[in-house]
Length: 144
Image 1 (tube, rainbow, N blue to C red):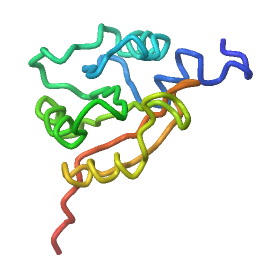
Image 2 (cartoon, helix red, strand yellow):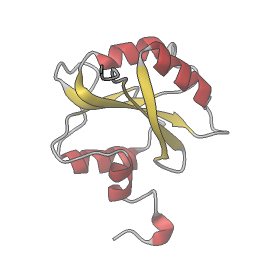
Image 3 (cartoon, rainbow, N blue to C red):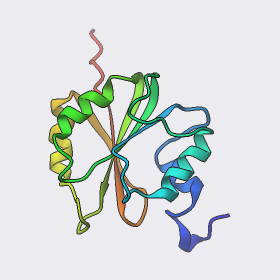
Image 4 (cartoon, rainbow, N blue to C red):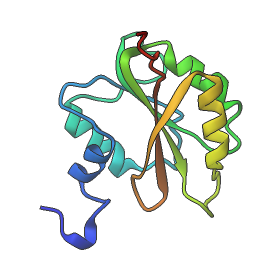
């Protein structure tokens, strides 16, 4: 059981915030020494398997993209991340929080998402140092 003061650190909490379900296929991109290992462990525990790396060639339900200000072109990376993504899949762009090394402006994420034809659908805190921004495919409007 997670104590009230530990909210955000508990395994169930992080997986719930990221809408991770058992048996989902989750790919991780942008791993480095600074990622939140507790969040990674919680996600692996919930989905029931190891996170796939960038070399995997499976269709995935969720892409976890650890992204920092100096990591390059976010639009290009999002387009690459969309390749293995299922039609109902989502990309979580995980960035350092405000004031931390590598912080990314929300407007930069929104612009890259729009250019990649993705819609920003949520933002959540996943740990003390990291934020998550949920991106999904834009849905075509139904014709009448």
